Length: 432
Image 1 (cartoon, one colour):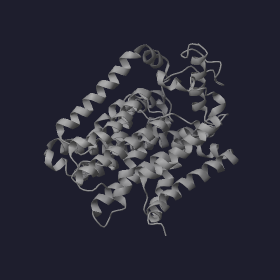
Image 2 (tube, rainbow, N blue to C red; image 1 turned 30 degrees about the horizontal axis):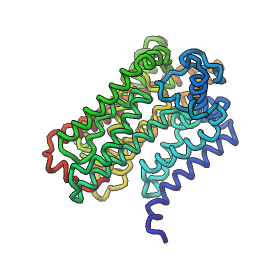
Image 3 (cartoon, rainbow, N blue to C red; image 1 turned 60 degrees about the horizontal axis):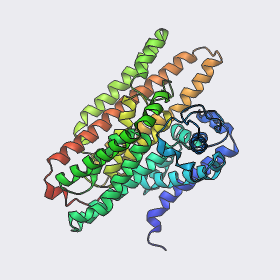
Image 4 (cartoon, rainbow, N blue to C red; image 1 turned 30 degrees about the vertical axis):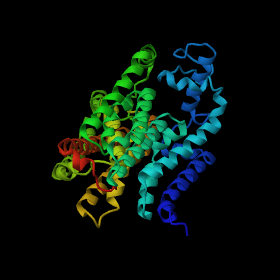
């Protein structure tokens, strides 16, 4: 038997399960309705918009105006670097094969990040991968999948820096992997802007404080140069980008917005929100020390946790957390799943990780309930408004609790990193 097979069989099962599920939904498209995902034709509708923008640019059209090459007539709402498909000769027809390539690469990346080592972990990984918000991004071929893969690749490179330091490689040699990692984060920020907040993940490499801060400052400066050089394009894109102010999004303003819009249902909203906040908040506060110490100083799992957590928290605070940005939660989930599979080493840490995993899975699978009750409300079903409000309230309370845990995890990691001597930081233990 190939010695690598025991390590690869369970991640391979996640990839196979994801592909089979996606093929089943394509074959039986009514399944999208059951999941609460509005299927649009053609598949990979957001990827089609990117390719159409490249076509328009090659044709000399204004890409920030309604686009005749796009089936929905959508203008381009991202930075200029997504237009590279035009000079390469790519058209909207190429979305068929590019979309499948994106799906396959994304599934493989998710399996590598979650890295299940047991059958139970495979089930959890599939629940995360096949959750409706994540499948929503997959069905659309959304470019946040690309950001996810860039984050994942950067984390893997930073882990190599840590491993090389652990075997005594000189710090000066780390640029061979730290440089490409910084380049991937820079590229992600140039493509979508919000990944700029994830640059602190560069500290997940093993290196002195001075060198790490140098990498961080240099990468931030390179990002700033891009934004200044193409500032007109970014300004035009930001002016027309839509805001996801619906119950299917995740953002800080949704709860007060719901409070304002549904005065007759404030009782059910409070009944749903307050007990969950009390339960989750009490649990999180009681285990704050474990949450503060949950993230290792260096390694891939650390980089993934920091990039995913910071990007998710920023998009939530900026109220730009489109449903498909739930893919960002799969990055910290890699650390949670790693802790959950090492109960023998630290039972308390494993318990905390399992609770966070359960909360994340529950949050992502509340989506179909919202969709079902929204349909029932539109059909005039009695009591549907109360049910919808309560499901929405539980979901928003879970988001607040998860954000609290993520904030503690990142804050604890940053504090420990800053107060750890260079000698200890440059000789890390093996990554999880």
